[in-house]
Length: 274
Ligand code: ARG
Image (cartoon, rainbow, N blue to C red; front, top):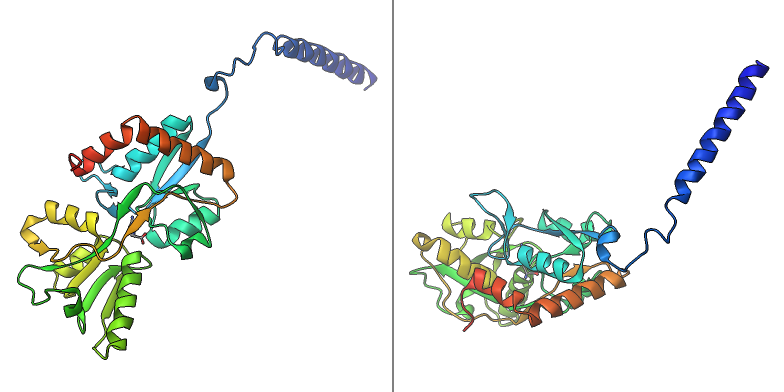
């Protein structure tokens, strides 16, 4: 019994000494911190978006990968600011909750900066100017926004398109006209399927997304009779408390705008700037 105890003490002493010697070989002097960021593990952030919103975020049918303007942009910002990013596809309604419960760090999803959202999250500087427009099938008797009174429109739930439809409904009723029947759908792409299937008379969505749909589905004969009727700006949403991340994003965004990376990404998805 005693012998084992002594033996244990001796071995642990040896382990301790070797261990200490091992440590001493890694003095800070021998591995000086040169300030090279590659020596320190990179910050990794999770970005999320609802990927049925081409050309901003969508699943590429060939590669089955999530791709798009927003995905390229956040990767470019990450590169410019020296962090890593992983982009994940989530349902639209769970994007801000994912941010708040720390499942994600960034929402990059063609998300419009609105006063209401600013109560819950912080936004980066604006990165894209957009607006709501309405679209119908060719040959529709709806020729102007006012002709929508009494009609059925499809929108994506909890989007600025949905808010615009609600406002329009209120305005029609105030004017003594019949209101709108609003179909609020889960995914951005659902609204176009609804129009195609004849489940609504019109859709309200972000103009660049409608235009992308028209480009990719010419046989569906969708038209946008009028220019966008709202002006809005997309921002990257973050938790309010993450001031450092906020700075990394804004600095990275400014950098990619200044060095031409932003324009390259823009042209990849929208063609040459007019
Ligand atoms: N810009 C609109 C909004 O912020 C729609 C965004 C929808 N984005 C998406 N990935 N489905 O409400």
